[in-house]
Amino acid sequence: MSVDNKMQLHNQLNIAQGKYTYFLLAIAASAIAFSTQVTKESVFAFSLIPLGLAVLSWGLSFYCGCQNIRYSNSNTIANIELLRVQMGEHPDVQTHPQLMQVASEGIRSAFKANTGKLCSYNNWQFRFILIGAVFFIVWRLLEMAIRTAGN
Image 1 (tube, rainbow, N blue to C red):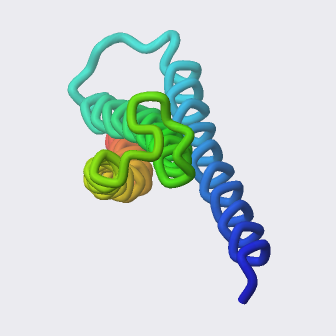
Image 2: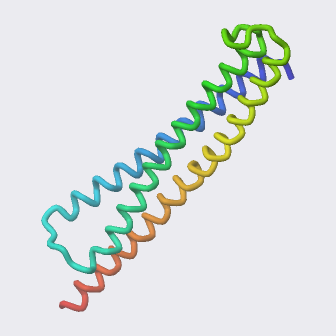
Image 3: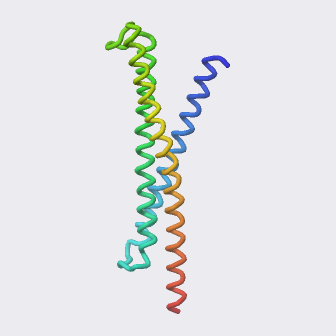
């Protein structure tokens, strides 16, 4: 496979991952807004606790999505810096072989650490969306049970 084809596939994957992250961010924000809207005239009751937990989960999902984007951007910058070092264009390293090797290893190490965090935030972003959905359903069922028992 040519370098151009690999770069094209890498770019497509990055675009798809970005869209996925933003999609989940939109879901979390919409779910929080919807929950706020449906309870705008409610008074505090213990039956709202599952909804509060749902909103908390969606808020954590949103946070994880933002961190995912942050680490993704950090990795992009690390890739740019690594290319600059390898091409001898980095002003602090230039073409000094030992400095190029040390800088490359340091950047790769940071990239690897960032990738681990990025993957973790990506996984938790999705999990918190689902946890929030479960709490929301529990809240709706609890509200229905309370209304049924009241009749």
